[in-house]
Length: 192
Image 1 (cartoon, rainbow, N blue to C red):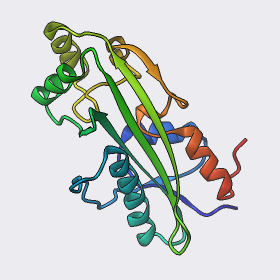
Image 2: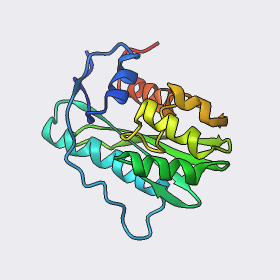
Image 3: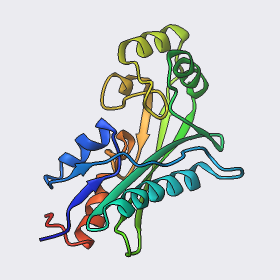
Image 4: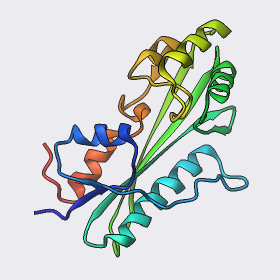
């Protein structure tokens, strides 16, 4: 029997994705400062935060394997955080209109006293040219204030794009299940 599994996150999106793997798990909030460091690239930020989240919870539950994940949107080399409110969501979507945005989604699997294992997915999203009215209608309809990039691709947000280029369609929602499943199989979890 593999060790207990914990998702080091309170994200409903990540919880719902992990449930697809049909493994029992608990959720715990990681206590991690998510402030970007000076000179840190969006990819480095996603890696650092995914590891930090997994390791912070693993230190509190040493008998468990812990999944930590983070996603950082990158526009012209700059990280885009979660908007938090309507004004910032509208601003983010306006800045991304007609452009290609890269999403770095990293998952880490940690257990106290063991090496931390990491997998990453990079997803490129090509936004179509959006009018101010389209952006406002979308933001008011889905209120994506807790989503990196200010959209929910699993919902109405899909209408904002020309293309999504990815190896793992679940990564854009917040947890790359292909990489997560590989890490869990390596740790001894019974997955197909």
